[in-house]
Length: 295
Length: 295
Image 1: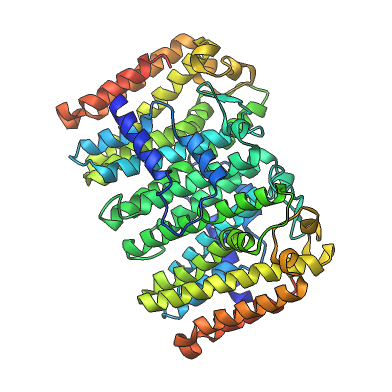
Image 2 (image 1 turned 135 degrees about the vertical axis):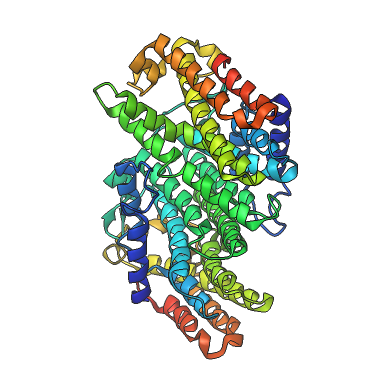
């Protein structure tokens, strides 16, 4: 996972480097710097790892797959920039570093998020990502659906509305919210590997189910960490979630039941990969890592 | 133009309607309502008209072209939502109606912009837009490039920086800024028609040059209207631009020279269409309309 994270970091650095866009294009330095601040130097790169490992199940790899993984990561990074804005979660720190609107300003942060999201589709749709235009168009549409009204952006809307609510949230509402806000992009990661690899219908379904359950487990694990974590470890104000009537399964079910559910979902994720045999070992290990990680 | 605007309105209404996304998808009502507020009920629909008329030069038309035109309009509408935000231009009214962050709230407006931008790529990449995946992928990439760091978003960044500057702006800097902020998307509109229509390299170049010069003329005309206009006619506080050290060619060259340049650019736009003969008449008329419009 660290090796993939290194590859992703290097490719993002190149994609957001001085020679990335075609020669005649003007790149406003402040905006590019803010995009780099948002996209570089951070994170586990879970989604790229998942995309790359899913594609590897079909023997697909190389520069094009890495580009697709980076396009996906740009969408994730844009969402963090916008979620951190004062009008949203109003966070000053992310991974111990100033958030984009703190390091630059609010307008620049909004534009940096916009430009990262836009650039993701540029990278995904470009011929350098896959020789087959049908595959590229499928990836673009699937990424857009996972990220938009019916996916990540819609989930963030539901999350903001949930914070405003006075009454506790139902388990069903929380699961829908989380499947959209964080689940959809994680599910896309494994589905994208299947699309790139030319999976059969059955194989696509298996990876989709893996991504769905892994994403759900990942979010619960995150909420457990938030509930248990200390501020220093996470690099942001922990226990903030509880203050805000955040919609989490830890709040709805209690810590023990949430832990049980998280393990169950991770086991389902592993089961979904049965047909891939030993080839699925890395993705099974990722499911295990998701429930045991401490950051 | 009114007929096309009607078609675009109806198609946007359908694309943002209750049955637009696939059956199982949850559509947060507040977010969808904000997207509709941003996209429906307004404007000349210049960009869609331009795309549709450019495609018509090649005999291309129908539902797919209308979808592409609507995807483009979604990108334009998202940019207005984000530009109106308090951290950006801080506008309360747009076409006499409350802006999205006034009608809803700031967080919802940010998300509605994000979701419209994202949905544009969903619509553009979908097989319903064009049977040939190569064409769809080309449209996606070209739209992303026109909208992102090296295009519209980058132009907005330069515009915000220009406002902060104390010294007057050079003509060259203003032209670059405007070619990015408003020009790139207008240029894309005519190029997209060429891509959809399967234009030759020469035909593509001609439409690209038409779009470039039309976009430049359009922006100068807009700045002239702002300089001359009254608040009621425009539905927003006019003369606001002058207060803010906005980078406009009216400010840099004076009103008379700006008018002369605007007419010259519109004439260049018409000239670029020479090879299309009588087929280019509507687009020539559009260039004429651009310099004579009063709203």
